[in-house]
Image (tube, rainbow, N blue to C red; front, top):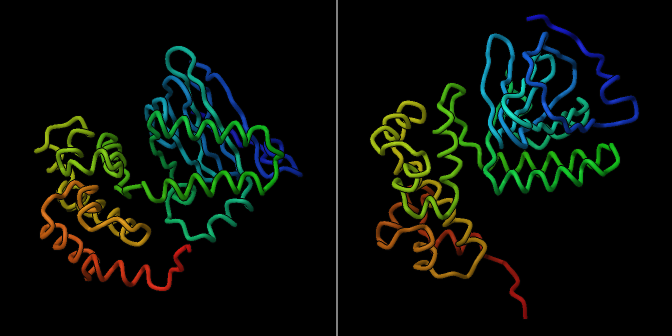
Length: 277
């Protein structure tokens, strides 16, 4: 497949910080891959598509969100009826300023496109924010506000699995951050994956070096720590939110992760807080 370089100034323009496009994708196989010196983020709002880059072809489904660094030649082909894509092209200066916030070396900053999946609720939230961005002036202020919110949200969710990890495992690890999932422990994670528990366990050991229980318990204790620092809920109430009914077990898990008891953690993080009169 041929490679075509696109003039970056022709995309964004000299006075704009980003370019926003909505399109129904062509279902014909692309004749060439394009590349330029800008950053791209796009997602499939509806339908399915094929994403071509380097020697790779991957299938995209509704809710898949892809970050493309500069210089990566790629193309997207629609599959089926009404594949609807939202594409945002961003100037290098904007992304350089965002990088100063210390995001991990993924998303825009990898060597290849980075894909994550948004479920129906998160896709709806993203689409709502995109409508506001589409209507906004093409200034650095508006695109930085949009991207910082998105990247901060993803930075919390991203399980940082290897690039070759199966998609179902990535989606299950993201789903495991939902209280309705982690409350059920490793069984909740396995259910979110749609795979047998034994298969999930083997695959997590391969790609993460830990069991489903270890993975979920870390998420549970992170949630417990936030509740301890930011609420007045009792330890029993917080443990129940995490899906743990045995308080001794809750204390052991928390101490193993944070090296202090839940009560000590709360005292150190709520010290000096001024209570309302």
